[in-house]
Image 1 (cartoon, rainbow, N blue to C red):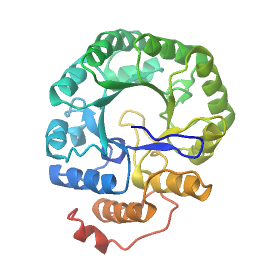
Image 2: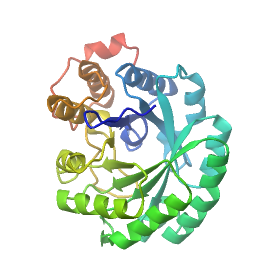
Image 3: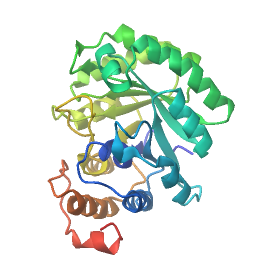
Image 4: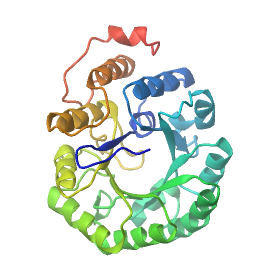
Amino acid sequence: MVLETHQSVFIEENSPRDGIQNESAWFSLDERISLIETLAECGFQRIQIGAFVDSRKVPQMVDTEKILDQLPHNGKTVYSALVLNECGMGRALASGIKHVSYFVSASDTHSRKNTNRSVEEGIRSAFRAIPMAKSHGMAVQGGIMNAFRCQLEGMVPPERVLRLVQAFTEMEVDEINLADTAGLAHPPQVIELIGRVRDICDTPITLHLHDTLGFGLVNAYAAWNVGVRRFDASCGGLGGCPFIPGVAGNIASEDMVNLFESMGVRTGVHLPGLAVVIGMLRDKLKHPLWSRYGSLSSETAVNKGFM
């Protein structure tokens, strides 16, 4: 069950998918499982464990089915995965996963680079894939990449985003995810689009914010102030799009948790536990993380079996 009240927020952890997909350091199956299990121990109610995509294009996402099979299913953590087309949805259904995020880009240039199809083709594919998933009892989040601005095309017309929102609403998705894929949005833009989405549907809104311009947390706070209670984040601030150069990672989960908990807004996530994950990732990746929340000796990573 999603916990979200006026005094709480729901944070989906994306580091096992968005976080590692661009990293040159190879994550083995066991390392990915260890990362997910440690994140679950931190209290995340939902974790995006991988993606049902072509592993020839995104090698780190290989064997998502095997990861799902080996994770504990105790009812406390919902495992989710990214899906971009009908083939991926077929794999998701066969895997038995209970929740997926199905994304379509609002930028035609990005869509062709990312999925080799136009925005219109992406919508048609979604109309075939999502009802099939819903008929099997799967929870589906409808996501819109480049909902605010595209590094390849510039400003994205809100009308284009609203058309995608309307399409997802017709498909009866459970959530709408507005993704600042390039990390170029600013607070007034975020607030305006949220308002316009709410004018046409009452489906819960999630924000997926990258931090290219350093506005990630500011945008999250602005969205919270207008009632958004669901956010994606990635431990260590990892992430980025393989098909858009120069894009920074997601908002660091530990920074988001620290912000909201400091405000008295519950996240359900154990901040000291995230410090352990930061140490694990720092030792594995051998490069600085994009996190403002403290530091931790990496020796704890060994005790978690990550190294």
